[in-house]
Image (cartoon, rainbow, N blue to C red; front, side, top):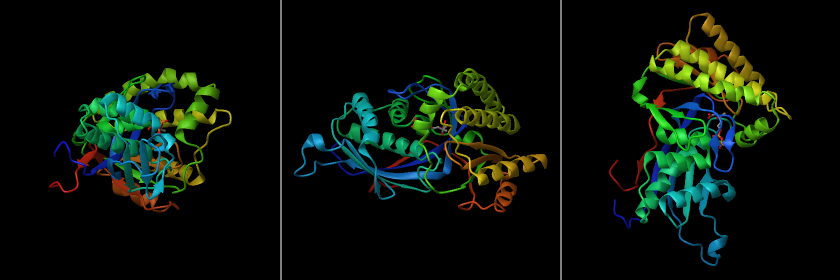
Length: 340
Ligand code: DP6
């Protein structure tokens, strides 16, 4: 790759699923998390982003042009959403220009399937390549994770890939284990609806912090859940991990249900999926569900039981066929024209 190269950069980045949840901010301006979280990148849920340095639009005042223009599945996104991310990129790398990105996702965006984690991870990794090419400083993986975090907290984990930890108050995530460390682990994604969620996770977590009387208890307990999950991951103990991930998501949702006004993402079919998981566990099948800011349910299982989980879900009125996925690594960079 030449330093004066102006060709676009392609990045494939993966949705990051939290096993232990980030919900609440220590600092809303810098977007620092109030709880530690543990996430995995999902191989089959990804965005493919093409990003390039934007030349100025003729006839438009330079100050009137956004620093970053983003299209997701053909829809132009509000530029304000990217302002702090671009500021962080510029401060960290010394990059001075403007960027343009086009993104396509393999799954419905904005529906609680971690599209912002995948989207900002792709932008951070691609923008870092372009910044360096334009004479800026090379960013380490941790710095790219920190830039992604400013865009969206969960994206800090997405940049790292494999199994990652994002400590409370931290600027970036770190790797616990590579994707290859747990080859038998599978996630079955049950998409209950493809409609965009009613309230963004950002607004919902702010409202939980400001109005839920259970928020303090949620924070107090979060470190213990993280430690329990780390022990389970260390021992590759799916049953122990399954138990702690269920506690984490249920406490997160209990906290937001107690907000004023309450935040409820669950739909009737979400609850049906939870009942199916409960029945599967009674039959000795590994099926440990988790939910995020949306009605979708993701079920952690293994290579032995994944088909039983999928078959059971096929009996329900889901919006799309269940997707079975393994853990993915960090975002993959591809410069068009380069040999793959
Ligand atoms: C429920 O990362 O989308 O998915 O930092 O405000 O952009 P912002 O929030 P975001 O929140 C993710 C919340 C979650 C849990 C998780 O991924 O840890």
